[in-house]
Each structure stands twice: as C-alpha cells, then as structure tokens.
Length: 273
Image 1: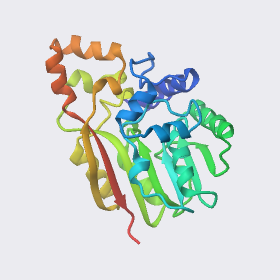
Image 2: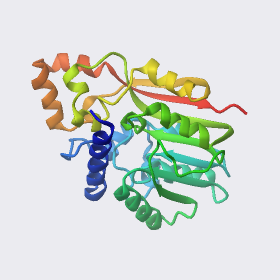
Image 3: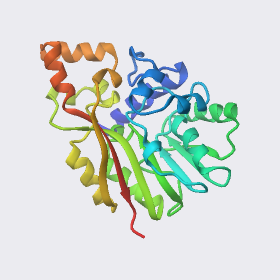
Image 4: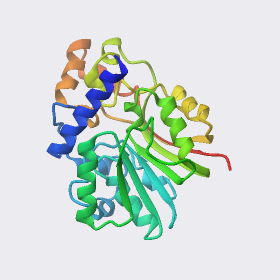
C-alpha cells in the first residue's frame, strides 16, 4: 500500500467517525461494542467516563495512557492523535489551571469535534491543532509529557513519528503510549488490506521493532509497563471480521489464534536531560 493511499483512507474513515459520532475504526461504521463499554474494558474508570463531555469518547483507544503517565499539576501535555479530545480532557484535570493540554489530529473533522467538546465542557487549558504526527505543529523542547492512544500504528512512518515526539519534548520529558503491536506476522492478505490498516491491525509493527523505533528516536529507559491481548472486535467492524474468516477459511477457534498475535501495550520512555 502506498503511503498517501493509507493516509487518505485513515483520514476519510476517521472523518466519518467524527461526523457520525461512530465508535469504530472502519469506514463502514459501526462495530458492535459501545464506546463506554470498550473504554471500561481497556482501563478507564466510571468516574473518568462521567467526567468528560458527551461525544468526546469515541471508543477508539486500546488502553488508558493517562492513568500511567504520572501527569503533574502545571505541566504541558501533548496528545498525538487526539480524536474527540477524550484523553486531553482527562489530562486537563491533572495539570490544573496553570498547565496546558495540546491535542494534534490529522483529521479536520476530529479537530472541529474536539473544539466543540472543549467549549461544551468549559475547558480553558485545552487546545486542539490540525496536523500530522510526522510533522507536529509544535515547537522544539516545549512539552513535558506526550501521550498517545492507539494512533501511531496508523502512521506509515513510525520512526519519524517518534523522532518528532522526541523533538518537541523538553529534556527530561516523558512519553507514554498505548498502542497495538504484533507478536507474530499476520497473513499476507490481512497485511495488504486497507480496511485492516484503518482498523489498527495491518499497520502495526512487531513489538520488538516498535520498541526499537522508540529507542532509535533517542528515548532512554524504554519500558513496556503493561501488555494484554486485544480482541479483534474492539478494533475492526463485523464485515472486516467476516473478511478474515472467509479469506482464511478458518473456524472461530482458529480466528482466536490470530487475535493472540495482536497485543495492546503501554510503553514509556524518557528524553535525556
């Protein structure tokens, strides 16, 4: 798949999610799980879900990076792929009025939705910017903490994304990412599926390669804080699941084996002082 084809597919799909308030990772919305139920299963509390504006949680994550990012009052936090602003609004409570949250998303419709959610919730310390993770609209050495939730797997050039993250962090700044990685190679037809890419599957790297990309960007003390198998139906809608079944001609039990090759990890790393 060509890089521009991938970006267009991702942008178009998530624009549709933003416009329809849909909670799936595919252009043929929607999957079967509600955003709130997915969010509970991947680590968000009922209190957190109640604390954010209606419509900011689109059920698109694969973990709760805010819970593990140790965000402090007064810090500046950057969310890579901020979507409807869900994690930004949770981080806003932690940094307080003297802190700042910046969300960056490549989809104009998502940025528009997030800004509307910020107005609805009365957030004064949250800002949303339109831009790509591989070319962040953020100045050098200005961010204390970077978080990202199931987004970097969608970026064609992941090494560049991590280099950009390293660039904008202050010395001593930290990275906390929840993302999808592979524990073994996927079948070829799935690797070449644009729907599976948008669904956060075929764009994922093998775990060791993903961690190496973070280290190559300059981060130190890169560590997997948590890791769990991530069910396919959290990431891709029913038609794509059926495509997997039909393409492989396998049973539901064998499909579970494929699920076992897809993992959700939470990774942190630090920019040297």
